[in-house]
Length: 216
Ligand code: 3PG
Image 1 (cartoon, rainbow, N blue to C red):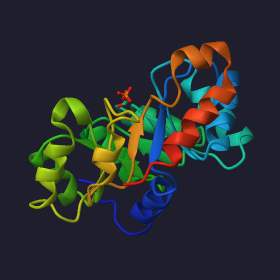
Image 2 (cartoon, helix red, strand yellow; image 1 turned 180 degrees about the vertical axis):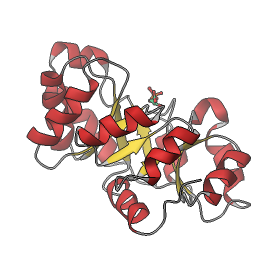
Image 3 (spheres, protein in one colour; image 1 turned 135 degrees about the vertical axis):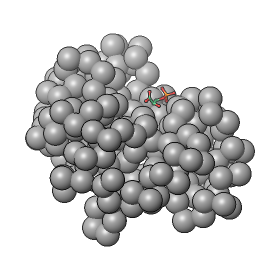
Image 4 (tube, rainbow, N blue to C red; image 1 turned 120 degrees about the vertical axis):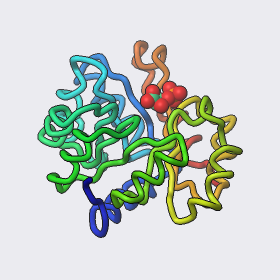
């Protein structure tokens, strides 16, 4: 299995520590992704995950990487090595996966770009620890057991840090952020479909500012 120690983990942590909330975006076109990313950065959310769930996603990563000053764009929903490599080529500074697979691990091993792999059980966390991963995405956070579940993992699996994602909003983000093993949370609530469709970038900046002000 691949290892991710030293610099790559440090680089990932530096990006994740920029803010308490990493926006998780599903984008329909690259041009509006740029405007959306600018609105999020203006609100204080600089690390942004664009999920590879739409045909526009790769172009959106490219455009945000090239055109949005201050943004650290990552690619999410990476399910195989081909998508990992394409996302890196497009300019992703970090890669997020909902879980873990041999293909994704092998792509991560050959790349200078850090991977945030997903885990939801003690065994998955242990497997990824053995592969050298000390920072994981806890997914799907609310559905898997929420903050209480993650808290229960923190003692036996001390030393592993998490970015919980899935079902998190302004209402419950603090439950996670107050845990010692949580670096940040991820969520789509800062970029609601209706505001994006309406081009309400000021509304999105306001949501981003509220999220950026969250403390543990
Ligand atoms: C996802 O990958 O879809 C993220 O977990 C976002 O989840 P959310 O929409 O519940 O914030």
